[in-house]
Image (cartoon, rainbow, N blue to C red; front, top):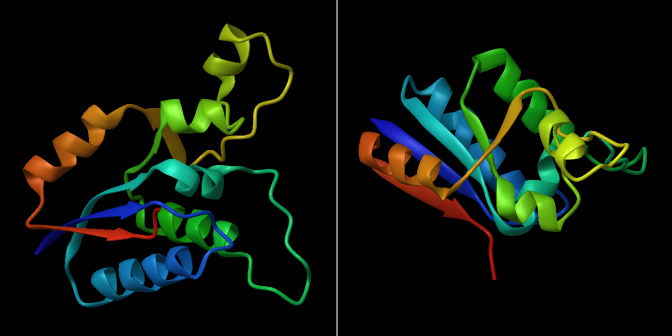
Length: 130
């Protein structure tokens, strides 16, 4: 079965941890993840600048490791990212900002990528949101 996973909460929210555990179970059971789409506060998971207390789980780092190890397509909504200060090199240059903080395993793109993933998937599972 092919899945799109839509993450709508920040990396500190329990829903984002549950999304990661779900994604890990999908891969472990031999299914395919077509795309992981980070939207609303979910885009904060893609920041390289997050720091968590040493006694807490670093869910953002766990997402990065999981995406990289499985070579998954991880898309961050560009509009939501820009509003929350998540920038890749192109957007940092466009808006004349000194910092780039998008982790390497993610790409900034639009809702069209979510729509494209929906066309390819059998199931869409969303975690979090308002």
